[in-house]
Length: 358
Image (cartoon, rainbow, N blue to C red; front, side, top):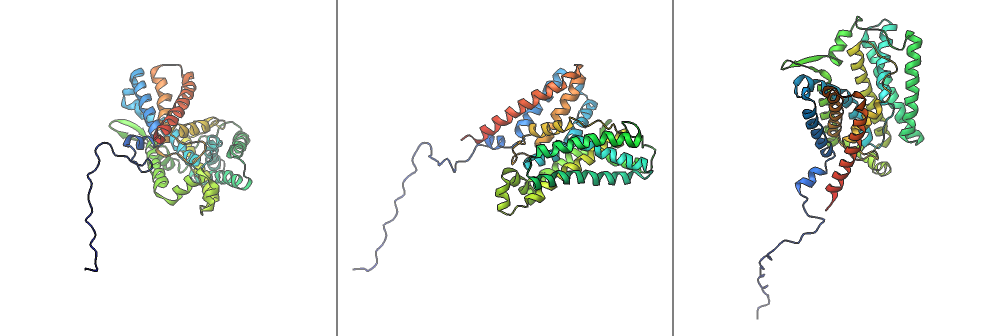
């Protein structure tokens, strides 16, 4: 008798016919649901709808020069909407962003003109002031634990008063003096407010900056450690701190990015018009926040993208110029914005619910 025992050959059973039963936890999601899960999909569809609507309602929109104007209007909003969106993904928002743009422009203009210096001295001074305002907002937030609404509302009121009071005190007027004939103006204008030709159409340089910064912000969010920190602190900052995320650094740096954006847009305004009205900027912060929200960013933080606010800003620019090209009363602009904001919010809510539905 052999001491070894051979195992019986395994019997293969043919697979059962009919649909396979899969575990819901491991089932592959359809491509359509994967696309809907992206935060920018809803606003992209909305932007296409708004564009088609004005193509039909306003024939001048079909001209290349009109589209260049629309893109310019969109870029001036989008350049600020990008850092505001990153801040919102990080769980905060900044009500002082609109007047901070004017603060930056006023600083550069008055330092250059009143001190009779090269305009680049004013540009650097404005950068320092803008970053300091952002750092102050972030520092107050992390040190006091107050909501960003209260902190930046206080900064908004401070900057609004300082803009008016200091400008009147220094210049004797509500606007700054014209600096177009000062040293360095032409070089600064070439960087911040130049134009170029594309097929005979004049395009503002801000459109290029807007798209380049959007690509850079997308890379930061999706491919860098800092991007992971932004999502982490926006989702749950206590859990993020527990796993080693530098919450304080991330929050303060995000506010400083908003300050950097305010400086850049402020320099564009200054070198486009050579002078600045001190009372401007009020209400623009809501436009920036709305563009980010329409672009798929949540007010609660932890969700969003940098591409979504690009489409959100485009929708704003499209409506702003589309109403003019259609010959309608421009007083309807804010009403359109309100409808867009509510509509985009509902679309984004539906998209997220559809994407997460099994």
